[in-house]
Amino acid sequence: MDSIAKINRKRKILDLLEARGTLSINELAEHLGISPITLRKDLADLERQRLIVRVWGGVSLSTQTTIQEPPFEDRSVENLEEKRAIAKVAVTLVKPNDVIALGGGTTTYEFAKLLGGIPNVQVVTNSVNIAYLLLRLGVRIAMPGGFSREGSYSLFGDKAEDFFKGIFIDKCFMGVDGIDTEGGLTTLNPSEASIYTSMINSAHTLIVLADHTKLGQKKLIPMSPIDKVDILITDELASKDILKKLEKKGVKIEIAPLESQLESYSHSDYKFK
Image 1 (spheres, rainbow, N blue to C red):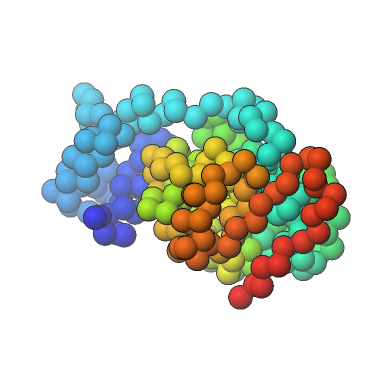
Image 2 (image 1 turned 135 degrees about the vertical axis):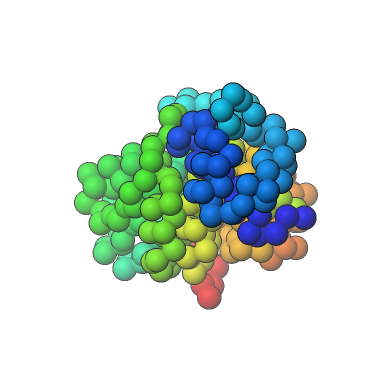
C-alpha cells in the first residue's frame, strides 16, 4: 500500500497536469521538489493505472482520466428526488453560528438552497455556483482562490488547498462519487481530491451526502478513509447490507425519506463530539 506522502505526490502530479497540460519530467520534479528518479516511480504507477500517458516532450493526463464525468447540468437531474430528500435531512444538522464547508456537486447544491433561513451560518466552499447561490440567499461565504476545471464550477490548486488547511470548520458536508468500507471516500476528479482531503481534515465533523447509487462504489481517486466519516445521509433505496457494513465501521446512518414521507422527519439524533 502506498504511503500518505506517495498518495499526495500522485494527486499533485495529476493536479499539475490538469492545470498545465503536458509537462516534462524535469518540470514536474521541480514543481514537486523531488528527484527525477522518485518521480519516475510515481509516473510508472500512474501509467499502470491509465491515468497518464507519455507523450513527446513529457507527460500528460490520459483521455480516460479527463472525460469520465458528465457536466454538472446533466448530473443535476439524476436522482433529483433522492438528492432533495437528502438535503432536507442534512439541513437539520446545521445550527445557528455554525461554520460549515460545502464541497462542490449536485447534492450539496440542493443542500445549499436550504441554508438561507439559518441565522449567522458561515459557509466556506470552493464551488463558484454554490457561492453565487448563497450570496443571493444572504448567507455569508468565504472562498479560496484557484483554477477552474472544465465541466465543473469548482476551484482547485495549491492556494485552495492551503486556504482550507488554515481554517477550522465545525461541519463539512461532502458529496462523493463513491463510498465504500475498503476504499473510503472516492472521486472521479484527480484535481479535486486534494482540496477535498484538506477540507475534510479541517473539519470537526464530516457528513457525507450520497444517494443510494454511490454506496459500495470505489472510484478513481481516494479522498478519505472511511473512519473519517461521522455521518452518512442517504436515501431509503440504499442497500441494507452496505449500510450495515458502514455502521460496523462506526458511521452513523441517516435515511432520508422520499417526498411522500418527508413531513414526518424532524431532526437527527446524532450527538456531536
